[in-house]
Length: 120
Length: 112
Image (tube, rainbow over all chains, first blue to last red; front, top):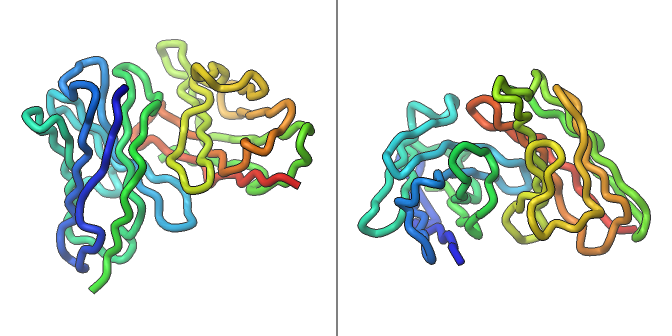
């Protein structure tokens, strides 16, 4: 079965760039039947959708983050990535990657999440 | 952005009793394709969110039939006919009609 696993630094300094990857196992990221998303959750708070990317590279981002966000797909490694620039303490959160079927908004498969803390 | 407002924000339910959560969106979630892009997720303690209900009332495979979703336009509800201990967690509604997809604040369900 397909699984998602987030990875990346758990601590990022303010003003630096947060970089995370989501490894897809048990299936191909190039399967055009799906698209890939990032969602985050500050401690004790709700969920915020960051954006999504298709294997083709087509993206949609949350306008509130759009100037700082970039997503990409690495088909050779079967993974997709999130970069968030100029981070502040407000970007401290658990970051989840997730998968949805193309043409739907059903986020049916989620990774376990990875905590990123922004602190000097 | 579409604002999703859930009520109540918390509820405590005796096992075997029903529970209901409401979610209102700031604009209609009915799309021109005839679908209503409204979802319910459950985040159990220490876990990632999991999809329960999609497009208002469709249960994901494996979701117990004690969970049911209803509503239309801007008003939606999740009902649990008989709460079980495994239902504890935070329930989130989500809209997917417009970018950015947005979630409600969450409703924490506890067992009495």
